[in-house]
Length: 336
Ligand code: NAD
Ligand code: UDP
Image 1 (cartoon, rainbow, N blue to C red):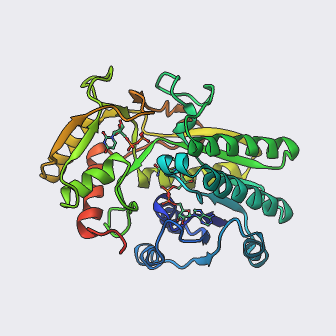
Image 2: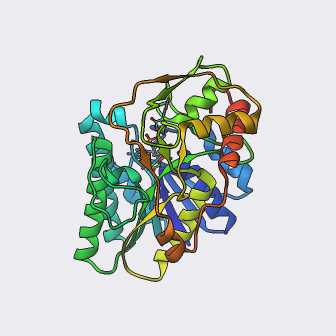
């Protein structure tokens, strides 16, 4: 298949492109490098041993994005491009709504024009909001607590409406849980800007000596050890879920929301302990107040993905801890 991957130089996109190239799909990446580095392109070539096309283009820029459709015969789009920092979205809601929603509208418009009606969209478990009880199933009511989450919920709605207007569309709304880990080569991984908001990059930066200690946000939750429980999924497993999803939507129509999670919950302390053991590194930490907006427990019912896509997460928490550390220790300053 000829697959356009928006945001294909980002964390999840780059791992997914490698899995797609392995299966000899033809890949066209469109990214503006707003949250990624050009160096990723050669690393993808190095790891995969394959070639692909790249366009440095902003998905908001209709004229230049249209050139990608004119010059390539595209069968499907995997749409990763978007801004993703929750805190930043609260501070800059207009930028988030504009970048994430307007770009998706531009993309859908061009897809309609060039008769490309298969899309895999990066949604998030954040659309389940704060009130649902885990394990989370795809049919639960959705709600959000910040502009980032609202962009995901609104885009899901837009893609449902696009299908209602034209039943020729085939769309997978993939709701990711907590992606961590890195490619096992240690060449590509997550490279957050500034102080990491997420748990695993924070832990690896403590391990590499860039931060003194981890703050564990809340130790009085109703969980097995009092710290928050999440569904961590290895980014390579997640990438493989996209391969299955793009193949699944190819020969049908409709819209399916599908959880991509491991279906298991681990607490913050489980992750810290596992990291320490897998890598034989001590992670100093302090227990602090809860982080506003966090819930105690969030994990997927991963049954629908297995049933529809024949996919389930295979890698263990130990694999995730080991691979995250290999990436960070080989690249203490990320891609810089
Ligand atoms: P990322 O920031 O590493 O990748 C996103 C890519 O999109 C970047 O390379 C960025 O340069 C590009 N981009 C952003 N806006 C663009 C635009 N207007 N035009 C062209 N390119 C643009 O993020 P990621 O972690 O790989 O996430 C990929 C997608 O998955 C995002 O939509 C994100 O919201 C979603 N998601 C991520 C997580 C997570 O924890 N990482 C969880 C759930 C959902
Ligand atoms: N967390 C923490 N310290 C940090 C970052 C995160 O204790 O520096 C906790 C957080 O409260 C949550 C879990 O780790 O219980 C996962 O948080 P992350 O931000 O990675 O993902 P999300 O909140 O989106 O599930």
